[in-house]
Length: 406
Image 1 (tube, rainbow, N blue to C red):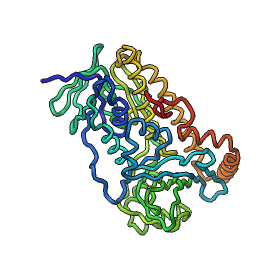
Image 2 (tube, rainbow, N blue to C red):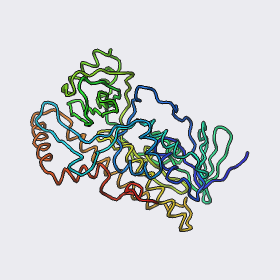
Image 3 (cartoon, helix red, strand yellow):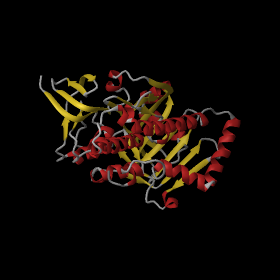
Image 4 (cartoon, rainbow, N blue to C red):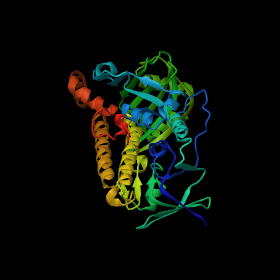
């Protein structure tokens, strides 16, 4: 068996894994990315169901690694306003990019578009090799390095292995890293919907007794991607019913805010589980993105959190390498682990708090929520602080997220 030696192996070629590889391109480090299946390169006329709300920090990261032009060259939709309200209540909050002197609060982009743009950004990078289709088969981590065997017979020796292989991470399981998790008891139903009235570049979210329902604007003025968090049985019923029945239920649940809604294409439901790895780093091993943490899609921060992981890890790896330090030693990965574990824990706590706050339909609880939402909407400094944090304008950010080079 022939052994190939590289500095690091990234297992997983999704948005976060490719983002990390792109952040390390043209560096002195040799990088291999192992991925089982890349996305189809040609986009259909209809949008994909899986989309992300990219923050300004994520935009900076993607610009910094040379992928933003590929996103703009395909399709994206900026949103400059956000409206949040509770069904059958007077409570509401409105956010506006202009009040922050920004052109947009964020962008809605299909996950596949982000992946394709990152693949474009990696073309011509001599220090990056993409091994696909290939899957990891066995992993051994030792004092001197790690050895990864692939299902195509190849073997890789590396100083560091990065788990970027998603919520059900094979690498995390091989390393036997414990996972704290809890089932939200909900599924996220995702679909593309055509609305009678244009979305006007506004992201909208309504809290219903069953769970939150988000309408995310797409590039077509009358197309939205929906994320509808409902109990598992309800999600199954909504996926199984005919289009007419679904349209009627969806329009009513959304308070007919954009007129009659008509679903286009397939509907799918994704189980919602919170996950938090006990360790984000081990000797010769580090976790990023969903392999390290998953959160409720309530505020659309999952991908943003993962891209921040990638940017922070790239910064730490390059700092260690330039200082002549071993990039795979646990002692040299501690700063990344402390940094990103605290950020993930804070986001998990915030999502859990919001979910509990808006759970239940007791009249007194609804009254308190209504008063709280109106008060929050009127407290401009606090509201500004919250939205700036969500956009990635404040907090302990990696250099790439601030538009700086690493």
